[in-house]
Length: 239
Length: 230
Image (cartoon, rainbow over all chains, first blue to last red; front, top):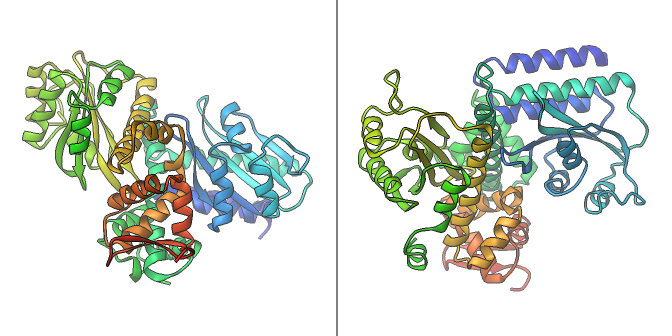
């Protein structure tokens, strides 16, 4: 597949997913995977702002603990925080030891092998609701074409948050943001239970959760909720 | 809970703060176990207290709905078309409320209860009030967890200033402790919070050790085991 057709396929796939009662974390996870496939980046993630303005990780192309930690740091500091606060894209930012801009974030990112970062604001009617974060293991600039594409993907991520688009006032948006952020917490609680019950790693726990949800046509958050409430068994998921 | 009431007989001060902060006429906090069996923690004034009692008696209303996980708004209880609550509505109006709002107090799948607020006049919340409601509910979640974990007022301030509830490892660790201790995730969060207080370490640090399996909770003895030191 060419990159263009991959991007079109991604948009169609996501649009298709947004019709019914979809799981927002699952859709955003798909989006981050497609970012890595369609654009010259090595990892992608979405961070959302809570209604009260605290930035929290919600989806990533990698569930490895170390990558999640890189998003965790950005609760306090990093390109996502700046992008979210200012509502402005940060593109082609080289990560180097000499860079004193983010003293907590930079060494972690370097240790993971990342050399450049982009952060695109997720904007809706003048309000920034989060940021799409992209990492590359090499420096150099995105092509103009790719730069346009990543903002397009950030816009798709924004649309994915708005589950009831008919009445879009601030109250509805706040409720959607809160649901998305709380869904991610439920998923982390379920991952802990799966890890303890089966002895697998956290990223494997997420894969099991996602695979089982897909195999049984169940929402990721719904399944995670049932695991936490013990109406589904953490030790009994599809591999 | 008893501890809370003993320390603050006239009510949890955050309840008054919630009503003032949101610029509404009164607030109440209900605690619940798994979204059911509501119990009043505190209310900011007599009307708020009557409204909470009414809800608990009838089993319907903003806090009852919010305890099940979703925020709820009724901007005019006196409207006749499609009322949220057939019995609660008219009785709440008689008590002096025209608009009521409920926010869940939750940390992931752990439901601690709900914050309910009322206004004597009808009308929706402004955008700012709506955001503030979520912020209040988030603060209350941390405050209740901190108090249930035996934290001092000083530790509460530290808890509110920090971002440990946004730390994914805390929630992963709660899931692990829930299985290790055969308890609910809510109780696991309280257990973790209490142990971090006892150790004098940050919640995130303890969570890290649980996730990396260097610290675990032993169901048989109800004790924490540190693999490195033992």
